[in-house]
Length: 515
Image (cartoon, rainbow, N blue to C red; front, side):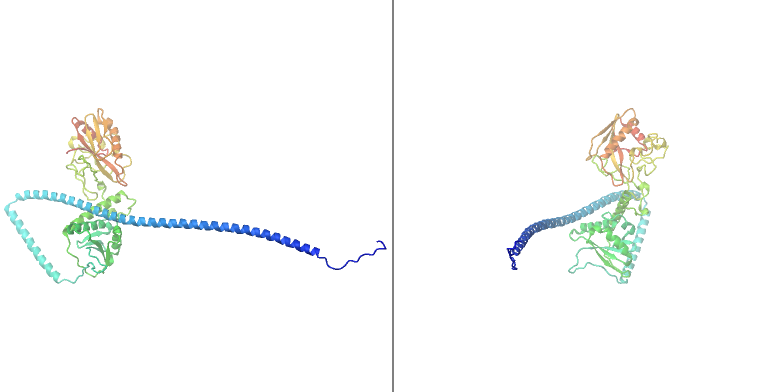
């Protein structure tokens, strides 16, 4: 430092430049941060708007889809309601048709029974014509005594009725919620269901069988309704079931409701104590006879259904099932050629399964050990070593084809009930022709014959099975059993005898067709 100069003394006043610079820098930084924050906020807001728009659009789509589903369900509901009414009408019509068919069957059985009774009356009249006058007078005296005894019993019954205890009657209610329809009185007792006033009992065994339209109780209700429809001519006021439940008949009431499941709400019930006597209208003898036939027919159908589907009805009582000889279904498929029109040839008596009778024709070889071939209607089953009808010798061992087992021509899977169906065969000198019945598919099947039928029998059986395969399914759990109705042309008598001999014991009956 020079000695001549003096150092300036710095003043102590503050300087404004550094402070403003710092302030400006700070404000600039804050502005930059604020700008960045505003941009980020705008980006976040845009993203949030896009997300909200996307969610809103999804909600709109979901709402539209649910609205479409609601409209679809409403449309389906309307369709199902319309279909329900249509199906209910169809069920009612089918029920009426079934009742008419059952009535027609009963009428045909009645006509057949009338013809049989007429034949018996003619036979009795011939026998009566041979009686002496003394025997006739004794018969008249005996009948007069019976008439006198019956009149005495009638008078006594009238006196007892006048002095009897008071009873009660159940009648339809005529009020606002009542009905004018005729009730069908079904009294539920300990033994089962008692149809009043005919006093026809449907036991627990019948109620435990397969339910539905084939149940005896359901079939009886249809028969009663058809009976009153025929005699009153008023289909609008058809009778309805009225269950009268005794304390001991609660179990029968439950089974009856199950058997009447397809009647839905078309029935009523009344709880009655055991000590309350009831009075019913006079019984209808004609209706009583129809109901007995209906129950017998329904029982046969139940047994057939239980045998056809044992896995579905395993609890069918063993006492109701027929013996093996009666297990054959005698169902004849109709045809217009005279072989399958539902009428049997002369001498061929058929019965339903479970009736306890026998068939004049031999049964299925899988069910009975008797031979299954005969010369014609009315032929009897033969023991081995005898002679068949018409002079045919029984083959050794009961089989016309040596070395083969009984029923060899029926095929492998022959289980369950056999449904018999006729097959028309034309027998000529050099050929056998299988002829389809009217309405059947398929063509004629011709099997040319050599010197003997035995050499071509396998070819004939194969053609027969091809013809059977066109029939379709016989019945659930069952099988078809063909029955040859042979029309013999000129020169075919010897061939027919050979065919009978070869098919003896094969399981396929051979019959001579007669007009």
